[in-house]
Length: 363
Image (cartoon, rainbow, N blue to C red):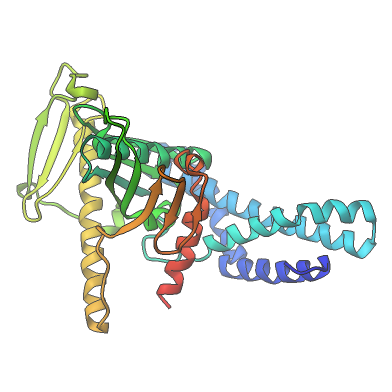
């Protein structure tokens, strides 16, 4: 940060102007007007899926425009305070300067999300891996962390499937984060997360290392043309279960879909009816197949360029609770000693650093 507030204003103005150019505010206003017209159509809600998509994009776009407008207003207020040389106004503006810089930098990260599927909703699957009951508990802790992150930002979520482990925690879980650019924002969370702590399940209080895999895929839209022939799917129905294997449903409403050509298996048991669960499971299966297709295309391009591709099984972040407290990302080297805040959903520093790192890797 420059010593002179006028220099700070000059730097921030250049950054904000660049953001406004990349976002293309005129196009955003035209898109907003078009979405408002669609939202006013009484027939819109006859198609629930399309209606939710329109209203979600409308809310996000309006929020983006308001955010840019508010940042520009705060910057101009500071500029005016400097020009007027009013000590009281200037002191107030200088106090807001660190927060203003942070808010502009956060919006700048949003402009880096320009991938093919970045603007999609995100489908997240978490699987417990090595570590026994601690790994299952760790998978549940990660689910809570991401749901809390979404709650902090006002993003809608829906849990499609929860497979409970016998003693504690989860074998796996699948949920969706519904907000524009959720996939681009969260795709960097894809990989293996490692936890080190004193095991609460060990009567000798020994240190335990456990692992959980996080899989992030974009939600499929109608334009993706992911068509799955009926003869390529095996459908199994079963009774939903709760923690410890207890039955939570008296009917066989849970649905498991197996895609025979690829062996991909998805399940859904959180809806009330078998029909609803099958529809939700199909959404998950289509997303998995879309991601498989995207990864195959990326691998083919990397092969042509002579580049190596990374596996989703790569470890990306360590969470250490003992013998010291630290969360550290292995790609960006961002770290914090406030582990509890991270587990409570305070992930923005890690997510933003990863987006910048990913952009740097693609250059």
